[in-house]
Length: 392
Length: 173
Image 1 (cartoon, rainbow over the protein chains, first blue to last red):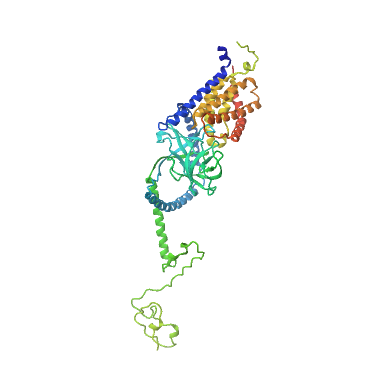
Image 2: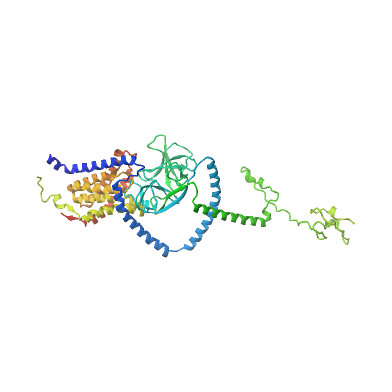
C-alpha cells in the first residue's frame, strides 16, 4: 500500500488538488445562488483583491498624476480656441435643452396620467479604473472607490456616452464592475425605433448581443439600443449602443441574435460614473441648469420678437398665418411671398392743403387755375378725388 | 528504493528559486495581466500566468510542486474575476502537472521546445477552462477556438524572451 502511494504520489496529489477545487467550486455555486441578500464573498477573493488593488492604484495614480501635470501646466496648445468652442457648444446645448425640457414636461404629464414612475439620475460618484480581471474570460474592471465612498453592489456604472456595467463586488476602497460584455452579465434593453425588448448579454470573446428575439424585418443596422429600465438596475433610456448585425441564433432555433456595438469603448475606459441615487425628480443642479437654459431661450425669443417688431414687412397683417402651407405637407406649392402693406400716415387732427387726400389728381387740375378749398377733414384716407375736390 | 544514476536529467537539471522570486514573479505576472490590458487591448492576447506556471513547473521538474504552483496561481487569478473561484485553478493545476512531467523527459532549454510547450499549454489551459465552465458549472458557453489559438500563438512568442529573463533567477540544487 505504501509503495503504491509512493509510486503514484504525483498523480494522487493532482487528483487531491483537483478534488479540493471542485468542492470549492460546488460550494460557491450553492452559496452564490442562495445568498443574494447576504452578498457573501469568498475569502480568497477578498484576499486577492486586497493584495493586488493597492499596486494597481499606485500604478494608475502615479501615471495619472504625471499626465495631469503635463496636460494642465505644460501642454496648453489651442486651449483658448478650445475654450471658445466649448463655450459656443454650451450655449447651443442650453437652447436644445430648453426645448427638450418642454417635451419632457409634456411626457411627464402623460406619464403621470398613466401612473408611470419615471426615475432620473440624481447623484453620481466619479471613479477611476485601476485594473482588469487578469483573465481573458471574465470581463470586469476595478475602480478606485468602494463602500467607503457610498458604493453598493448592483449600482449602475456609466459614462456620458453610455452604459458600462454594474457593480458586482464592493470592497472598502475598491469595487469590481461587471461589464455589459461579460458572458454572465445581463441588461434589459429596448430598440429605439422598433421598440423591441430583449436581454443584452456578452459572449465568450467579449461581444455584446441581444438573444432570444423573434425575427423581425424592421430591425436595421445602426438602430440605437437603449436601456429599458425593466431590470431595476439601469435607469430607462440610457444609450447602450447600436445594432451591428442581425443573424440567426445558433443556439435557439427560430430566434435571432442581434450583435450590438457598445456606445462606450469598454476596452479603453479611464473614468466612469457610478449612479448612487436615482429619484423621481431631477436633482437641484439639473433643475437649475434647465432653468438657466429656459431663461436663455426666453431672452433669445424676446430679442427675435423685437427684431420682428422693427421689421413690419415680415408681419402678416391680414392674419393669414393659420393658412400657411406647412399645415398640409402634401401640397407642393411654394409659400406665397408676403407683400409689404402700403405705408399710410395716420389721420391728421387739423387738415391743411398738405394733408394726405386733399390734393386733387393731376387730371382735374388746369394750368393757371385756382385750386379749390379742401374740405375740412378727409374722412377716408384713401384718395377719392370726387369727394375732396371741386371743379371750377 | 529506486536507483537513480547521477547522470539522469532529473539529477543534473533540477532547479530551485529564491523564496522572493517564487512569491513575487507570479504576483507580478497577475498584476501585469490585470493592469496592462487597460493600456493596450492587445495584452488580452497574452497569458502571463500560464507562462509563469509552465516556467516554474518545468524548471523544478516536480509534478507535485507544479500542480500546487498551478493551483495557487490559478486561484489567485480566479479571485480577481467575477466568476467562481477554481476554474483557472483546475486548469492550471493540470498544466503545472503536465509541464513538470514533460520537463523530466525532454530538453526544455531548447527555444523551439519552449515555443511549442508554451503554445500547447496555453491552448490546453483554454480548453480546460472551457471544459470546467461547460461540464462542471453547466454554463452555456462556446469555446472561442480562433481567439484562443491566436492567444496561444502570442503567448508562445512572448514566452521565449520571458523564459530567458526568468532563467537568470534559477538556482541549481
